Amino acid sequence: MIPLMLVYLAASSCGTSNLGRCPASNPLVACTELTADEKIREALDDQDLASAQVLLEAAIADEPENYERYPLLAAVYAGLSGFNLLAIASSSASSGGGASIMDSMDAFLPTPEGLTRTEYRAKIDLLGQAISTIGALPAEFLATSATDKYASSASQQLGIYQAAQASMYMKMFTTNFSTGLPDPSQLSDLTDEDAAAILTVLADAAASGGAFAEAAASTLATINSGGGTDRDNLANFLST
Image (cartoon, rainbow, N blue to C red):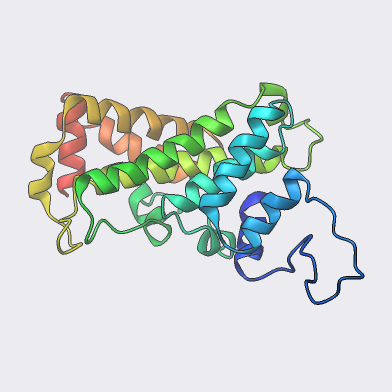
């Protein structure tokens, strides 16, 4: 199931009608101040994720218990990271059976080509913000019995963003940033801390029950079967 929030953003990027805009050519039509949510929707209709981020962060700070905004902010962070919301919302994404999580997610992720490692890491961190935003929701909002219209979407989003972040993190150590082609020599930069972070988020994705949980679990099992340290097991997996 593709999260409702991703479908919403994909629809916005295809050009839905704009809300609350005053017809400047008609002075007889009264204009009223847009609500916070109307301003957010207007930014999304304009495909202006940067403005939507600012508006959503401010709205959540003002009303932290309006939980329906959290999944939307998480989706905005994911969009800013380069995660292809439109592609995943219009796909029939599934766990991919025994496929590697990197193979399953590759079509939805930004390429490192032409970026510096720092720039690509910033995109990974944005997905981390998406994960943290969903994680800030109370457990009852994410429960299967929750009645909020975006509740099931939020729990699905969480698993997808975890799978995406793990895949981007691994791609950072397997791809030449100049050419965008596979380059095992990049693995020399993989640290024990990086390996631990990747395996943690991969385990979270596997436990999420989301669309890519099966692929994440399969990848994690393959990595952990190596018999060495976490770093060595991950490096051996990525080198193949």
